[in-house]
Amino acid sequence: MLDADAVYLDNAATTPLDPRVLEAMLPHLYGPRGNPSSLHAAGVAAREAVEEARWSVADLVGAAPEEIIFTASGTEADNLAVLGLARACGDRRHVVVSGVEHAAVREAARCLESSGCEVTWLGVDEAGMVSPEDLEKALRPDTALAAVVWANNEVGTVQPVGELAEVCAERAVPFHADAVQAAGRLPIDVAETETPVSTLALSAHKLYGPQGVGALYVRDGVRVEPVLRGGGQERGLRSGTQNVSGIVGFGAAARLAREELEERARHERELRETLISGLASIPGVRLNGHREKRLSNNVHVSVEGVEAEGLVLLCDARGYAIGSGSACASAATGHKASPVLLAMSRDEREAFSAVRITVGKENTADEVEGFLEAFSAAVEQLRRVSPLYASS
Image (cartoon, rainbow, N blue to C red; front, side, top):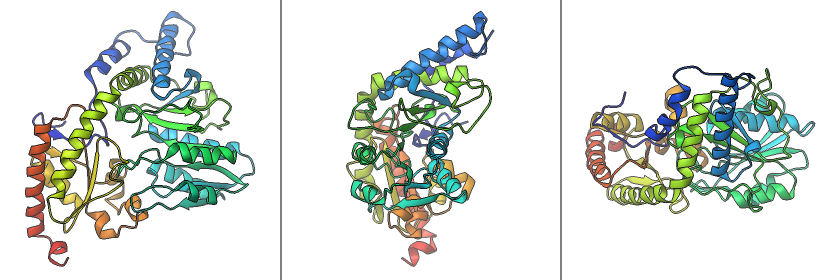
């Protein structure tokens, strides 16, 4: 459990559960409950709660409720999109994936590659941006799908999704966007003709909802083959008894995110700019990602002469929780060099020295100022004993 006095600055990894979301979930966690597939009154009540949440999640991204498929996570939603779109395309055996995808998309593409598909890994510029022209050149008559993350989970770069999706639409190629970090921070409207994404991955715990529930938007008319098979729930695309309390929480979080998006984003941008300005005053600190086209809450920096793991732990000891790269990969991979930074032409030393500071709606200006002091002191302390800094 997080120390009550600690300052949490790792909101890209997960966000705190909003008390209003918990309140909506509680009736479905205590007392009698039904399976949404059951015909009796308890089942009908559960089904109605799921469908009400489906409307709220759909509203967050401008979708129709029947286009929302609930999953157990954003990772599952990404896998369902990438594997499901590819398998629905018959003999088309080529996919295009950007070099800065979340591991959920990247590893799903590698799974396709191991089963005989050809994967074109799309390059990015030094800010992590994908060029629509490069995407167009990569598409082929046998391309089954293209996938580009809406906003990168590490460096925060926001992609020109509308342009990328249009390129694919003109060639009748399904386009998937991982919007796990973008939803609730950027206005998204999939009904707009200039943003013809085929599928879109979402996750509740990135917008102050519960962990363990996600969703996949599937545009009406887009064919996706299921990855899980069983009872045929979620229009047959995601079998398994629905997590009613989690889905209700997702619905509440989505509604609040839509209602409060502008105020949350404004607040986060102010804190983000204070962080960027303060960190820039520390010698050897380099901002990663696009300077302007980035998430409202994201600050990602490489710190010369310091290993990220040590910096994260020392900041934690000083009462500030920050991230090292992607939390989804760090613990599992033993802090390997970030594929995202390597794709952005950074060397391994820079990749191993990168940390991510992500603010949230509850953070304050005083917390950010305190963090900047603690961070500067931590960097100085680590550099005094760092052979990396001595040899740089």
